[in-house]
Amino acid sequence: MAGAPDQLCVPDLGEIESAEITELSIAPGAAFAEGDTLAVLESDKASFDLPAPCDGVLRQWLIEPGTAVGSGDVLADLEATGAGAAAEAEGESDAAPELGAVAAAAAAAANPEPEGHGAAAPEPQPAAAEATVQPLSVPDLGEIESAEIIELVVAPGGEFAEGDTLAVLESEKASFDLPAPGAGELLAWKVALGDAVAGGDVLGEWRGVVQVRGGAPVNAPPGPAAMQSETSPPVAARTAPAATKPAAPVRPSAATSGGPVYAGPGARKLARQLGVDLSEVAPSGARGRIQIEDIHAYVRANLGAGSELLRVRDLPDFSGFGVVRRQARSRIDRTAADNLHRSWVGIPHVTHHDEADVTEMEALRRRLRSEDETLRRLTGLSFLVVACVRALREFPKFRASLDERTGDLVIKEYFHIGIAVDTERGLLVPVLRGADALSLGEISDGIADLAGRARAGQLKLDDMRGACFSISNLGGIGGTGFTPIINPPEVAILGVARTGSRVFLGEDGQSPRESKLMPLSLSYNHKVINGVEAARFVRAIAEQLRRPEDLT
Image 1 (tube, rainbow, N blue to C red):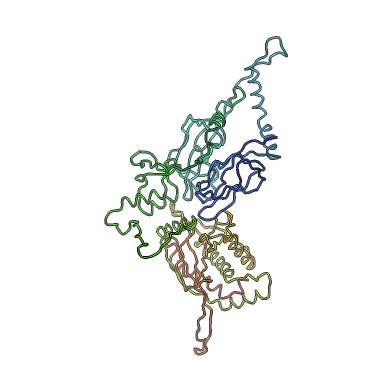
Image 2 (cartoon, rainbow, N blue to C red):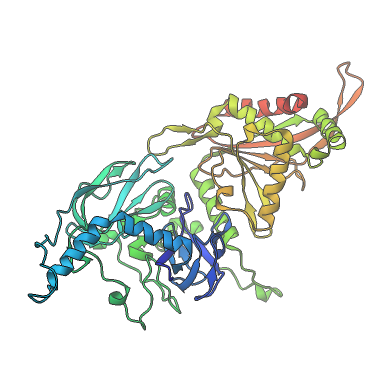
């Protein structure tokens, strides 16, 4: 029995605005089982597999490798098979028995039997039922307190199918589409562009499809056969495949067209940092959205002679001096560089340096590794994580995020620690979750697992999200200190350099004593944290490391 056709969509990517399709794992016509990898996506933070939602057959891909996609984008048409498809069909028949009865009555009324044949015709049934007016509400936004209405896609009186985009909302972290909860007609909007809304707020009113004529809903959109012929290209939501991608046309700016400004959070943040009026920027993105590259182009075109030093300059021809070669940077490297630059420009960084006496900690670490087989991977970083968690308990401001709109601090009551890992593809910061509930050995194993999967390219999307504080450890390489750049929306990051030995005079002023010192460098957001607080925070970490028995 053939399954019902379905679609493969991008899951909720959370803070990640978009990801690139790097691999299509199966070909059209191929069968797959639930959980099989159908495609591989890569964002600026990680690459991750897209699993099959059920058993089935791939009918066609609606995208191609290299396409940038966002949450909810349709990637492929599937055909579910087996028990899942049967259950779905059974659920559909159980869910709408009344609708089926009305359709049957309407069909009978439209095609009556000749007089005198068969049973008496039943009394006429109404061909339509009263459609219910329903509110269109904002779904639960999770950690996002509010979002701005940046686009109303469907006009009052317009019809739509289930899943169609009705409006576009934008928060500080991402922009996202508001899908239609069912097929129907939009009656009215109760909001306007620029309004701030929260989860549960009513945006408008709509009427669902209830009327039936000839067995089909009146307002139902045309089916695939009506929308396209067998030779026409497949229709996809937001992203349409093409053999070659034509350059996106540059549209007039909002200032010249008089229309609203559409831009993602990254573009808006960069515009604020550079003092750019987005209404003056010509967009090049889909549906007239302003991209970061559009802002760069605007700045380059409008810098005055007095800002000559800020212009992006063409490189000289270095081949005149000797042999050269070009090396392309990975997507992770390029995106990380942009993020670090925005962080450095937009956050007032201050770095506080200190040292922790880890003489006793190193002795304890060596002893535990030799005595306990389960602690054979125990490193100084494991002790440091425990010390940081305890300092974060004492100084909650360091596990906060600043709400730039309201000026409030969002204090996280969890202790997820980001651990910077150097990989061949670039710097990644996977997250050790719930570090406050882990033992020293569990922390050590957790760090080793994250680092191993990061270098093997096996991190999941959730492995990269939710940190409240980060640690960047260069102790295995060297250095006496550095200035780590904050990973927003966090407000602080701790850098660790190589532990070194130094000789001090004893308490008697004569006897030499050798101590092992770990350099600590805390970069913090001066909008949130002042110098005294930073010094106390780092000193609390140092004191914890000086008394390692308390950390086990």
